[in-house]
Length: 253
Ligand SMILES: [Zn+2]
Ligand SMILES: [Zn+2]
Image 1: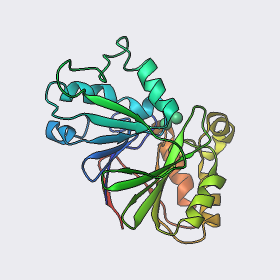
Image 2 (image 1 turned 60 degrees about the vertical axis):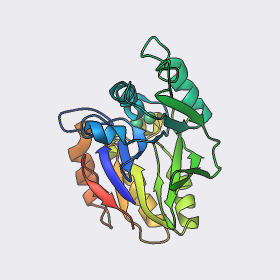
Image 3 (image 1 turned 90 degrees about the horizontal axis):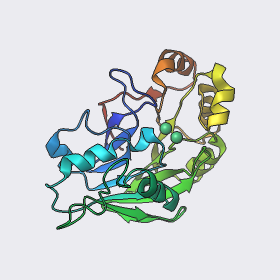
Image 4 (image 1 turned 180 degrees about the horizontal axis):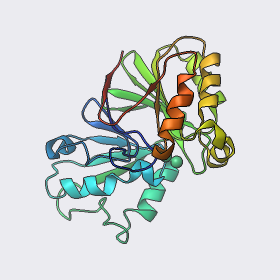
């Protein structure tokens, strides 16, 4: 499985983009950034977009993706998530006020986007992947995902403030080969992290001590203004972790 990091931060500064990963060159996991790194042909190649929640830093690439492929698409791109997220996109983004309703355009031929709801906790096949959404603890309806291709899987936390639930899933799912987990604030902003449903380095250190085997931990969703502090605090972990960077490509297994 190929995982290209299109964006892995929670804010924008030069060189820092918001959260999106491209799997096997065609499957987007969150859509906080698309156009900074993907050329036009690469954007035409996208078949599916799987979203964790409707916060702007996870969806803001979608309106511009629709605009790029408008008039060129031979097929619809599926945008997939839990019902609350799909409803929020319809009501608040593709509503002909903030942006055109790309589920109804163009008038002839397949629409740009097809919105698709999936139930939490159920396995769903999308192309070569099997995905299982699991609810996480955030300020709006949100899920993380267990994503598998054949016998290789990784856990994607989405935005969450609760590690115990992640630990349980990881410990009972033997074919997880990597953990992609959010980290947003440095330790001194613990209260703010709790209020906003996010994690700090100390929570991840605890996760590492309770996971029952050694699995690579890849971190994303850092607020760029705290990147230096977060990086320093993660250096104190007993185990090596990787703070992801925009543009890098990871392979599993
Ligand atoms: Zn969020
Ligand atoms: Zn976020």
